[in-house]
Image 1 (cartoon, rainbow, N blue to C red):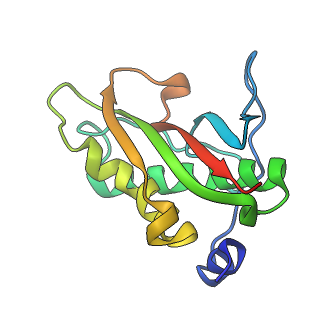
Image 2 (cartoon, rainbow, N blue to C red; image 1 turned 135 degrees about the vertical axis):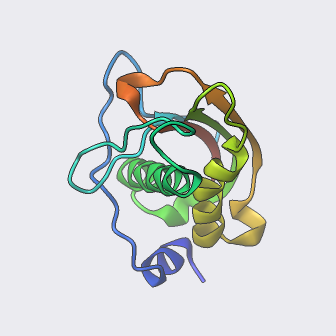
Length: 154
């Protein structure tokens, strides 16, 4: 099954691909590798999910924010590459979670992103190397920021 078909079967809606909020590119392709800048949990109504884990948000809310961040990233991939079928595999994920000092469930939160990528790209191509760390501050108070590297089809 193609990535586009898997995505369609999930009945999910992509937000509008986010635009750069500074001097950077949301996606840069070098030698079949797509480097995606940090994305946040952008909803389809162009609002962002904000809040701190361990303070005003629980793990499930963080998981959903990471999943929404994945949808924003898929929107960028589709807008820049034309189709999710151009993706060969997810290679690396780096997730930042806005959290209190004592919060230690960042990997569980970033699973929201990782499970979405697995569901869209499959077990073999959607599970990557990954880091999930806590952050004391993120731009605009967003709950998570995730960057990723994808290999594209030739």
